[in-house]
Length: 307
Ligand SMILES: Nc1ncnc2c1ncn2[C@@H]1O[C@H](COP(=O)(O)OP(=O)(O)OP(=O)(O)O)[C@@H](O)[C@H]1O
Ligand SMILES: [Mg+2]
Image (cartoon, rainbow, N blue to C red; front, side, top):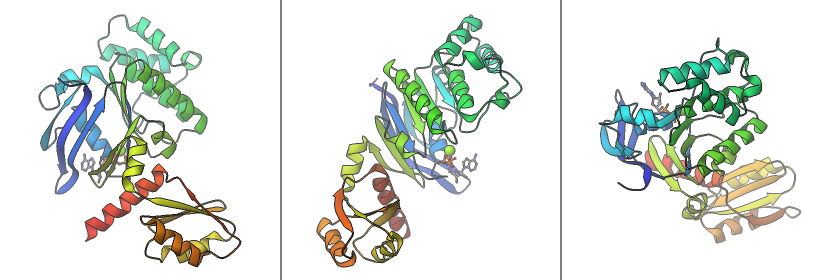
């Protein structure tokens, strides 16, 4: 037994002749919030389902909370919480009724007391009698989180829990995740939002079924060895076009009046900017972001796949 709540090695999954997850390995420490990112269709949900024993991998090995993901699937299900990607609760029941129903499905003792406590802990008391189908995205997601906490799991799999939820509700949701983590609950959470990735202790990045990076945000950024320059001024898209054509510029992106250009070779990048950027623009080196690092990983991986 080791100290990882998830410890899987070389998991593979095919659907028909599509190889959806390729030699996927991941270790997650207890109490950690681990982000899971990657483009649509990259295999996040499939990997989550294999790690929690809902889907049998074609090959590989692994443990979830010390239990074998091939042979102890029923035991795993009782110890984890899984919030599915798409809302899967009953619209014609109220929040309280949904939670009561799920408590009974789990066969929990004293379901009423458990639901009462969970409603209170997740700040749901004021809406407890509203039908699920009329709730806003933020309240629905909070109810879904409550539902997967009823049986006191020590590990949560949250599959894009905040998709389409407004910034305030997302912020509150993440506060709750950090409280849970402080209480020792481990969390694997998939997301497309970079600000959420940055709230995690560690992140993993998947693309076309390949795990391209995993670790702390700092370690992932540093490992790519990129330099990013910021060019400030007006009329940036024409400049961007010119930069994009140059060998030595890996990627560019505009945010308002700032154009960011990233390259692998600092000297080369700065030489290109000195040549291309006219006077009157302010140019300076800035920190490479996680988004820059992921964009580079994706590009690099695509180029490798096509070569
Ligand atoms: N049950 C299934 N049968 C056949 N193909 C599937 C099945 N589930 C997933 N796939 C395919 O496997 C690939 C990976 O899908 P998956 O849902 O794991 O990706 P994802 O990273 O979760 O994407 P998203 O960000 O859109 O949720 C996709 O091409 C998808 O169409
Ligand atoms: Mg998915």
